[in-house]
Image (cartoon, rainbow, N blue to C red):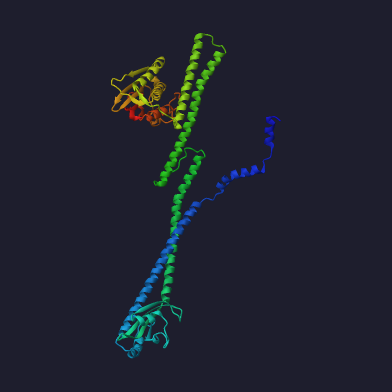
Length: 503
């Protein structure tokens, strides 16, 4: 079976299941990306903000509630301790008999008996009388009572009452007579009111915390929207640029960091658009530049091969055109290769001490006859002062001089004259090449050395010659400046530093 038949047969074969699976797996990331839910960052940001706020509010409410509870408890405990100490002091010089007989009057006259229970205990810790209920004869099994009898000073207790289960606070002050404990005055109050008050405080602070949480949620939503909406717009614009919509611009709505990002995206978009257009123009220009000499070479070669031209002068003229156009093609290809080496970092200099005047004069001599045939005058002002030897690559610098002279011919040859001068200014050798053509439009001067940039010039060329020259001069630690001369025309100024250490 021939190759065409095998190819047709392959096209008609069914796709195997494995190939279908592989194709589905290849398309899966794109499908997943298109079905991926949006707003995931918004939700995560909002949840994290609310979670942090909730933790902070919870800690604040808990700390405030504990502080208030501690404050109330310590205040009540100090009040009970003070009252018990005062009451015990009233019976300081009483014996146990007189103490117990006068205690009834104290209990009956106690003004805060509705909130505070007063207990009168004997020296063994048994209740003799109480302001709340009749618990006479009961033994109080509480730490503060036994401790007060043992230490002979006021002792306090906070905890659950064994008989009622209530959370209480008590203070017991011993009644001492001749250094002997004859009884104990005990003040007791329940913390139920405090706990009820604390519940109200917790409820209020929790409500305030919920309001704060709600406010933070609203503020966070607004802030997230103000941040993420521009990010989404930037992302959509970046996708459009990636899809090929070069040059698209975003509206700048703020002067903050997001505004700077929008400026950067817009600048990137414009530069990509400019680079794309420049590349297209370069391809078109190079194609045209290559096609023109190739057409001339093919035309004359076919004419000569067919024997259509028999006159020796015409044959010589045709061969001259072929050689000239081939040389132009060679120069163009070499220029492109040179630029490619610069772009890939393979550009090297063969540095050695050189006579810069000799290299410039060689270039001037080479182009003088060429200019004469085109009726273009080339004026070279020889340097009257001594120019020292500098360090550099003679071939590269000669390439710069020839390229600039060729540009002066293409872009300024209509002026009829090109001027070349060289001199020394401070620690630099300065070379100027001026034409008397139309010059360069002011708006194009900042871009004239950009690669592939040709501006409004109709002259033939790839648009990379000046970029190559600028790179070579910069590699010699020099500068290449292009501007319009007074009186018309364009002037190129090259400054090369003097000294072996300059390169």
